[in-house]
Length: 581
Image 1 (cartoon, rainbow, N blue to C red):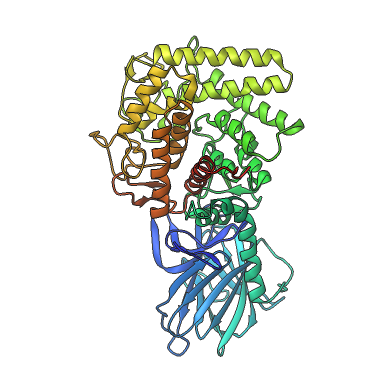
Image 2 (image 1 turned 180 degrees about the horizontal axis):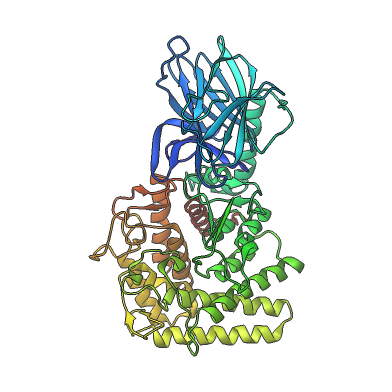
């Protein structure tokens, strides 16, 4: 990654080219762990679907042009020896394309058309455009020629396995526009020439990024790229998302999970407070009748078969400190009531009668899907869950005081003390925290970092316990960061998801807890190693704890958010000037 005048450059195989608000991107990544040799238009409506294949060809021969991709915010250039093709977003759903000395062949990503799958091609007699109609996304993709010619058209109105193809050509230049749309819209009318469109897109990115990357200049070399990952993964309200949403990625992790969103909200809070509020509230828009948050939300799907951990009290406390203006009036009431209902879910639906401790029903509920904490049994009263609930109850007690609800404030304060006492009395064995079966009461131990997460309680832990947790956490610290399974564990897996790799959320939560517990040197080390990791390996979903290599989805927003949060805090600690509010 390098920064040039037009913004950070990046590998298109790792980070897709997209635009704030758009539900589609350009990328060679077309499905889960699937990278192709060709550029595709990939939509995230109704799931992740590669819709159109975009192939640069040499006009004289019709052969594939061996081209290189050069993406920056606002402009993607596909360059070959013979010429180039450029892509820029005019708006969130309008893509301008122009070429010089290269033609562009547009075909469906999947060639076969059935009554329920595939992409149909036809020419619209109203405006002369060509349209690809996709069963998978339920949308149409209109190609309007601005200059040049359709040098070749094949398969219009054809069915089954016909060759469907458009070739854009000019002598030597051509220009066109590709739109993602619903059933119909008025014929395309330009809002400016190509260079104006490009400049507008770049300006949009700079305006988004500057408030929280500017203060980090010189201290966080990957800040602009982190900002691009967040900016380009943001979608406008559509489908089941009633607010602007920062997806976890515009690769296959194209959802908002109900704890990931907290880190994105925190990262953009000072620079984009309305967007931050929307990120925090988005899963709460789908809270069920018992107060549970969904596992995830995206364009056309809300999943309730699992939940995610209640880190929201911790997150809201920090969000309120980062927002330029305090929550007041209806905002404060809404936040309180939604958080209260989410907390009641854990107290009423996830506690065995007579028990003070809540339980997970599966590792997925914790966000640490396959952590070794859950190897012996899936239903467990886990120490991290109790710690998060204590923080959430204490935040509710503070908010109830602000709202002049003294009875509720007292109730939540008493409940917080009871859950904390049960955590220390029942799950601490004098040396470490244990997990316990809500069915039998049998306790188990593991070498997962998850068992050390009560460090998030910070100053609320007895110093003797926080010191032991800090010592154990240090054992998970590799040259690159905190391994989620102890590197010496027989269960450690280099690419084992939560059984070894380094993750952003665990890093941020533990760093914060260590610092509040007084273990600042260790917190500094955790922060420094993770920041260097991102500067070296990008913003992957997770990282190999021994090598630092990025793993899984390589354009993950909560990783970018974590980097910005840690970089900002580091800069603030080492500067006399306040950073980001």
